[in-house]
Image (cartoon, rainbow, N blue to C red; front, top):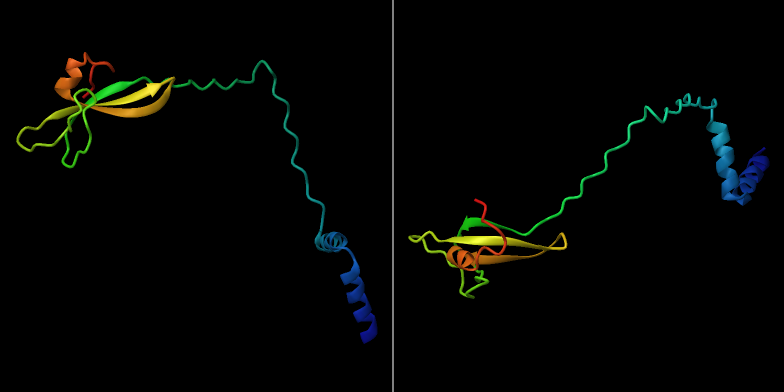
Length: 126
């Protein structure tokens, strides 16, 4: 008896892996799975179409902010550093620049310099 079991094991090892897997699946499978009932096709006139997504077009804009401590930016117009002074409480115009709907850079201005430049990116938002 011991000789027959070893022959079966060696025969199983020699069989291709794919054949062994299918035999194992067939042995473990108890009953065929039931398929879910098919859904009825929707009537074309009653089916709702998804609304197309509205594409956002970004425009350059400016915002007025207080100059914070540790600011290391330079004014685009005059070239001087936009610096924090505790007693003066200076403000700066921060401008997000977009070209062809894509963000390119951020420009910083002293608020008086931004007004002197005739607000190139529109009125500042608070």
